[in-house]
Length: 431
Ligand SMILES: *Cc1c(COP(=O)(O)O)cnc(C)c1O
Image (cartoon, rainbow, N blue to C red; front, side):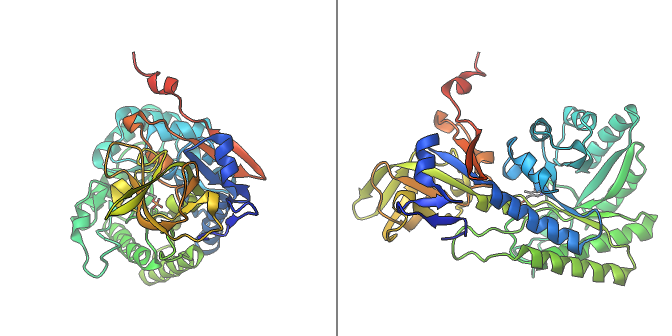
């Protein structure tokens, strides 16, 4: 099995954290998102412990809400000592509705509207990650009018493509996120921010990408951030107390993906940062990271009921499921690889080569192509692993397919955390 929380039970069914997947499907219906809370907690702890051990005091992981945002996730990450990164009024409202402390929220976004900014300040969001000069102006005004000082990080782009490290891809400077260092604009951004009444600049944020499997990319990022911080210090005397390195450690979706030792990578990044700071005579900043995928992805499994198989002579076999791109658009968007199992026959040999197709009127509505599972019959439960991140969060009502329910597993209990959408929900907004 891909993960150690998965097993085959005495009925020959897939068990997730000890829960029979077929029983879960029978109790809650399909499609069903299943989230193993203990695995989420364990993932949180890897970051929290390693960051506490290796980085200066006050360093911590912020859970990137966009990966999986619903009320039930916030008490878990809050309990594990994480902050959270949020990107919209909706994510802020969800976190606050779940009792998440506002001062541990970091508010991202390329185009925060005036209403977003006012809402964030009013709710006491701990830190804004300011994307651009326009936002800075509105935020400064908003804070001043309310007589508060708003803490901010300034988002800069370091001009780094983690996938093509050798050839420094200046294309990454050309991005809608943040302000580029390379063009000199980031320096002017800091000058503006430090001089804006109502604003306290605590440091810099940069995010280089997602699904990163080694520390090297983060070390290159640290080099560039530190070089930038030094030039800012030399130019205007401002010293940053915080570096936010963004999100991005990779997750193992299929057996052939590497397994990241996150704690070891964090140790390596910290070592690199300390050495760089010593060389530059720069006080070692506290560090924030924003893991999303690597907190929730491998804790999630989606269960479907299959409508059976279809053989297209001379071509291939299809297995249809009662969901698809509406609950998991990642194959349609990125051709993402997934591990798929026949949960009803998990003890048998997976020798039926097939393509898993969804129920939408789109030939691209697939979950996986040319994979092997145990040959299913209509009614079998199909499990797609590693769907905790960017599945529920990216789900849609295309073809008016209803959104699945989400169940959390913890302490021997399967708890419905998000109920299945109904036709009434669907029609509720329509006058
Ligand atoms: C997407 C994103 C993250 C989370 O990325 P993961 O790959 O899910 O860890 C964190 N920070 C920012 C700014 C992002 O855009």
